[in-house]
Length: 464
Image 1 (tube, one colour):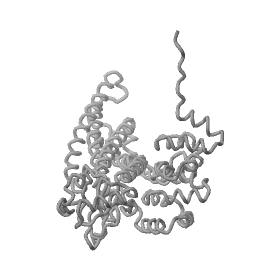
Image 2 (spheres, helix red, strand yellow):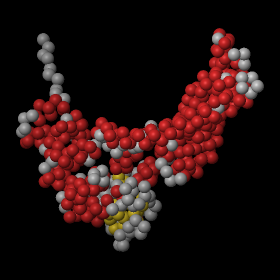
Image 3 (cartoon, rainbow, N blue to C red):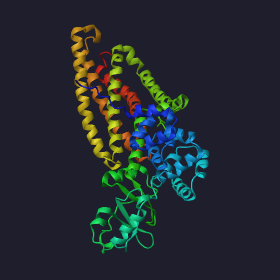
Image 4 (cartoon, helix red, strand yellow):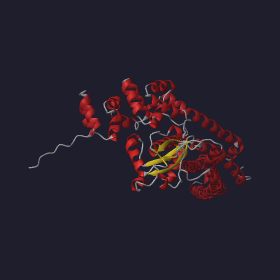
C-alpha cells in the first residue's frame, strides 16, 4: 500500500504563509536563508510587501537584493522604509549602485538622501555624481585592491587578506607606483602561483586596457566585449587610478541602452520608467512628439499625390498600386534601418564602413527589388487574363511600370534606411532616432515620386 507524499510548498507559498503572522524574527530568518535572486523574485511577486521584505533582512543581504530590483521598486522601498533603515541600506550599497539609483531621483530627493550617508560614503557619492551623466565616472566603484609595484608576493597576499572583504572583486589586483599612477593590473591566480619572494614588477608586462573617467558608458560596453574582462581600471588625464568598472554594471547599462534603442526604433522617445509604472499623460508626452513629426511627414505624401493629380485622373488604375508601392519601399527601408542600427549598437560596423555598407545595400536592394518587381509584373499580367476590363488593353505596359517602380522604390528604401543611421551618427546624433517609422515616412513620399515618374515614362501617349 502506497503512502501519499505531500508536495513541498513553493517559496512563494512559504512566504505567503508567514508574512501575515507579523512574526519579524521568523520572517527575518526565512528571508536570510534564501538566495538573493529568489528574494528578488519574491519582491516582484509580492510587490505590496517589498519594503517589509527588504526591511526584515540583514543590511548586507538587503543591499544585495535592493541593487538588482527595478528602479520603480527601489523608489517604493526607500519611500516606505523607516528613515534609519533606509539610511543603513544606502550606506551599505556599493558606491556605483548607489549612484545609479540616486541619479534616477529628483534633485531635492537626492539632497535629502545624501544627508543620511556616512561622511566617507557621502564624499564618494558626491564625487561620482559630479561626473557627466552617462559617463564611466558614474559607473565606477572605489572598492578595489591596489598594490605597490615594489611589493613582494607575501606583502600582496597579506594586503588582500586585510582589505579584500571590502573590495568589489579580488579577481584582478591593480598596480600603482609611489605617485599613485596606474601601472598595470594582475590576475589573482598569477599572484598565487608566483614565488613569495618575487616582486610585483616581475610578473607584469605593462600592457593594460583602461577606461577614461569621462568616456561614454557605451565605450565601456564595447571595451568589455572586445577584451573579455571582468573589471577594468578607470583613469584620469594624469593616469591616476580613480576606480574600477565591473562587468555586472556594464551589462546593466547595456540592457538599458538596448531597451532605449528598441523604443526609439519603434518611433517613440525612450521611456525612463517601466511601461506599467509610467503615468498615462507622461506616456502620451513620450509618444505624441514623434506621432506629430511622422504625421507631418505623411502630409507630404498627400502633396505628392496632388502633384500627380492629372495623371491619376487620366488613369485611375494607377491609384490601385499606390499602397503596394509605398509599403514595399517602407518595408525595405525599415529592414535596412533596423539591421544597421543593431549592427552599430554591437560594434559590428562603424562610420568608416559607410562605403562597404552602401555597396552591400545597393546589391541587396537590386536583388530584393528585382524579385518584387517580377512578382508585381506577373500579378498585373496574370490578373488581366481573367479580368481584362480591370487594367485595360495596355496591361503589359502597366505591369512593366509597376515592376520597374518596385525595383526603384525598394532600392531607394534600402539605401535610405542604411545610410540615414550612419549620417546621424556622423552628425553626433543617436542613430536610433532614424527609426523604422521615420524611414518609412521618408520612403513613402519619395516612393510616390518614383512610381508616378516611371508610370509617366511607360504610359505616356497610352493612358496618360
